[in-house]
Image (cartoon, rainbow, N blue to C red):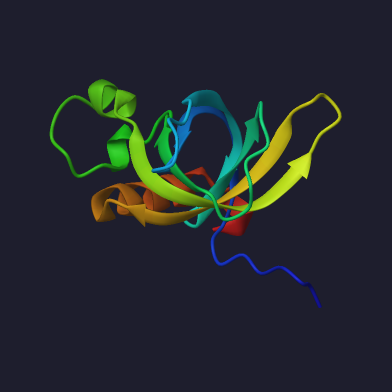
Length: 131
């Protein structure tokens, strides 16, 4: 019996994500990093700084190849360049050996059309033996 609690299938990625803390107390510095995997529920990213559990983040994900799954009109190449915008919350923080941090981010708010396109993209990217 597994202790897997994930509701969504995760797929590995090596794409970029821009993120910035949502705060009213100070000006938060934006950062850009790579995210290691993505699912309909969130993503795993590397961060140059530790961000406390519960912190809300504005996310701007680059999802290469997701253009054909979007309902927007226009050339697929242009849709591929459009980032997925979301609000997420830090639900896991792990210090890595290279002064980096691994952050587990849970999506809290995503445009419904973007979530639909992301889920279609993930389904299409799954290995055939998992479909």
